[in-house]
Image 1 (cartoon, rainbow, N blue to C red):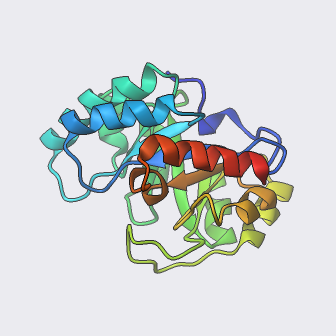
Image 2: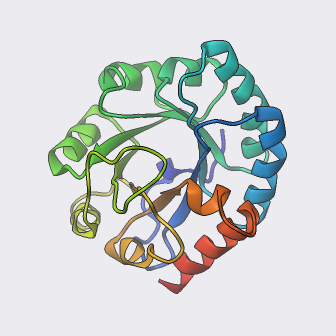
Length: 223
């Protein structure tokens, strides 16, 4: 079980150096080729977690990707989470699962994962959904999208104020997601985000993923 994870609790809140990076994989990848890319990114700076998010692939392809990529993260003390599938996360040695609002029964997922594995839940821009996630036993709540993103169609927008409210009211860590870059992340860090979830800002960085990680770490520190 990796220790540097979103489930550790709040680490000082946002601008007090408590905010950390949370990487989400590209939506399509060749696991064997991506393993080296992931390793270089994780070796470039501080990363708390990696979420494997592959869409429209079967269980065998998912298991293969997990078997290849999970050890890369866990060997570096980085939590490895699986999107959507608490059952596969449990069965394949992941550190937990991240579920959206439409990804099954959250209470059942919590029971399936047990106390030792993490559960993260997408809450969009909703205070009500976030409180429900806390009640069901989530280890962190994810708010967004804060900015336009090319990764997925944005149906829900969130404002930094929700991070500030959550940080003041609850101890449960928050993850900010959606179009986050080194250039626009400062308000989210200052508002109290415990983690910044990013995709394109790292994997599509013009100077490579390692440079993307370094740029975001520097931006978090500067905020």
